Length: 395
Image (cartoon, rainbow, N blue to C red; front, side, top):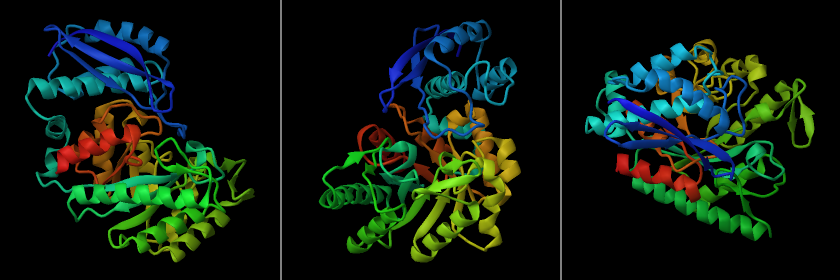
């Protein structure tokens, strides 16, 4: 393929805020577009996000290098982007701009080679994974808190986690059923019931532990306990206040927060994972779980930021990592992070962001990489696009 032009436009994301869409046009007049999501709980090491105006200016410079170039691989374009912007956070180009170009190239090449997008990515980056696909565990955020909701919860996400032994359609059906039953249950307990950024329910609770109690009880009473586990995304960076954590209305130390996690693990035997249990500024605390012999999946997000250097540095203190392409800025760098995580034996969880668009690319990425899990929110509104693509690829 040869690029004739690169375009940029403003689009609204699911939070009603502006993000960018980028399109590539080849010399036949074919246009390929993608849109880039945005996070609200953003780690300090993530790729920078630039405005529409800055993106437009940056594309003018990129066009000089990309227009007319004969492109045969994603790596070819990503290496050029790295040459033009060698900064770790894509501070010159913008991580949202560079990622959009990278994804558009992947889409163009998949069409040109008559391959599905997931197969194109697999052929370039993951051929050593073999050809056996297994469905990923679905991490569905059913109760929202923290920066994702207007309520009194400090933890950001309360998730249910499906098994990956049953047909995916059955697992998705159960997630949908559970979301509706939970809504009915919470409505009976409160007059006001809103939805948070990721489609999970939002209202005030007794404390940060009550959502786990409610979800656990629903799994038991609806005959789903054998098919689901629970998960927490603490997003502790947003709780971090001058060396302590804001929790249940007071400041506590990392040791005290660790005791909270231990109490949840003891109380809820089906608690599968804890994501970002400590702030990235409190990275030594992640080792507490290993030292205590705790076997739950401890997942890094802000700490690792889809970055091979950070995964190499901190992975030994984790058992899983979040993969978010817009944290690192190109598809090649994203796949390098996945490959290293797999080599280190870490659970790979490909994730959406809190402000999403109508782009389902991360599901193709998850299948290409044979990821262990996908985190895609509740089965409602803009998140349904991810669920639909999941069923297309795995059913």
